Image 1 (cartoon, rainbow, N blue to C red):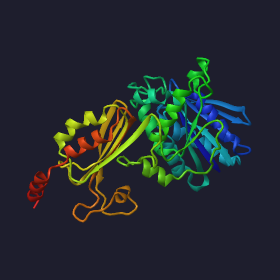
Image 2: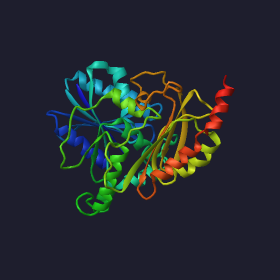
Image 3: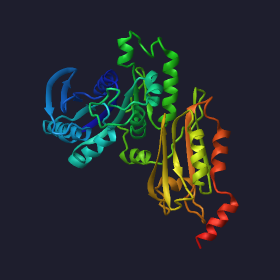
Image 4: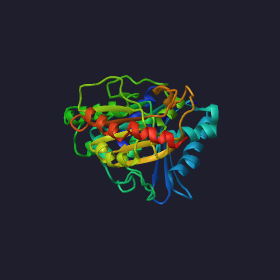
Length: 364
């Protein structure tokens, strides 16, 4: 069975994307799952655009992972047993494609091949969603009060995992009588697509008139991109509203100076990411992530010992420090992200040669 996964925070974008993917394969089955209030999962199955099954299933725990484990995967198994060869899954809002792909691989193995992982969105809404401080529950995207993720957190996680972003005017545009992308808000649409190219430089951005590229999902590459601390940037500098600035420093960061510099580094940043070599934890690789108004640090384990397949190894190995170094990328509007400011802030955070000498002597 060939399977395509579609995630989205907009029901209309998801519907258009699943229909587009279904049209690329004959005899495709489209399945939409939605998690409703009261731990109820609504499942709808379509063939040739016609609804052939509608069912509700009440889960003991109405969480997103339960939805995947107790309804999404059994549905795929049932369709596999019935002989369906191409299935398009429209996931509930807030359910990540990586979570479903991992669950299917564990539960169904090689019987099912995930062919595409797709995120569907309206580019006009993207910048507001990145900066939204409300949780997915507070914004009405999920029915789980415990879901504290913001829309920006969800989208940036999806950008790392998916291979394709399908763009379409969303539900809000339709309700307002606007055809975004077709003339009503071309400036906002263009800016959103430009931001997309910075947030997901690896992904194919596909509009209504663009050719869709099937069978391009690589789970190993998706996992590598999703690793905290990994830094991927656009290969080319485009003439648009947004830019990504990357800077690396070779000595450990002074924790207090970095703490003081971080608010300035993050100011105006839509997406901040990188890996830090902190003087206070020299053997640990610290992942840095910032999405809109949120910033967090996490310990991602010890520094690489030299595995050539590791993303850190691509940054260069030094005889004295191995792969340990700090690499930070900042994505934002061009007027808010200045390369010199990013460079000066990070350079000022690293230990001075004198501090470095004292630290090395203290470790002997």
